[in-house]
Amino acid sequence: MIQSVETHATIAEAQRAMGADAIYMAGGTLVMRDVNAGVTATRIVRSSDPVLADIRLSGDGVTIGAGVTMAMIAVHRDLTFLAPVARSVGGPQIRNMATVGGNLFAPHPYGDFAVAMLALGARVSVAGQSAAPRPIADVLRERGRIGLVASVQVPRPQAPADFGFLKASRIKPKGVSVLSIAAYLPRQGGRIRGARVAFGAMGPMPLQASAVERVLDGQSLDAATITRAAQVAVEGLDPPTDPLATTWYRREVAGVHLKRLLERMARG
Ligand SMILES: Cc1cc2nc3c(=O)[nH]c(=O)nc-3n(C[C@H](O)[C@H](O)[C@H](O)COP(=O)(O)OP(=O)(O)OC[C@H]3O[C@@H](n4cnc5c(N)ncnc54)[C@H](O)[C@@H]3O)c2cc1C
Image 1 (cartoon, rainbow, N blue to C red):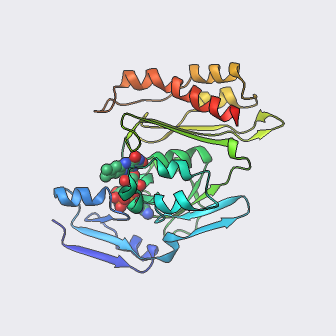
Image 2: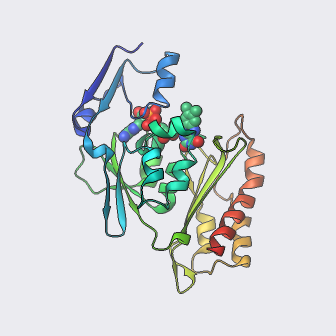
């Protein structure tokens, strides 16, 4: 039973107010479900820090406040590369509430936006810490212990075709992921330099597809390379069985969807 809801003026104060009896609530699309089911902490901690709603461009990157919603991203003129990712999260009501910060902590099979952040190599600023922003892969691995996220710093692809996202779901257009894939393939002289590919719903959290990255790196995105990448799609991934799909099914279709995404990116 919830006994208090506290709103703090800064995210650092909210961080200090956390404890074993508290849960932080952003958009509340998941937290409120637990509140209504009576299965959450006794204190809800919130923050009205304006930094959380900030979208700030800097050089070839952008800093996105943890409280920025999917709806805000979907219409931002400088974040068109992320718009398809934001639009893939739930329906319009969910997107109006669902935040970037909450998506990093959303359990399987959720976390489509986090998949894109992982592929882009985003870095995460944790509330109340002056240390350099942390790689998102670390944050996703340690998400029970990391503390509150203040913002994410995201590189902006130089060419639109360098970044691609695909979500496979059973219900169109707003179903939950059977799997999602994001690929960031910066190219120099036609060759991929520093490939990053991430899968969602193919493990307990969004996971990088290291075998795929190794196949793609240094290559041009041609038919032979795409076929080889698809062949190693599930290497190192550990898809669960859930009501949407079995482990077997996810493993069978991962390469097919990766091939489709890479072919789309090759066409530009
Ligand atoms: C009907 C429905 C459909 C959905 N469809 C999708 C979908 O298609 N794709 C998808 O990815 N997700 C989906 N979701 C899940 C969810 O809506 C999103 O993942 C959303 O981004 C979560 O954000 P939120 O702000 O609502 O999180 P909240 O519910 O507020 O919080 C979720 C978790 O994140 C933690 N948290 C929130 N903000 C922070 C922060 N700044 N720092 C540290 N911890 C934080 C909370 O403590 C909590 O543990 C769906 C949910 C519902 C109910």
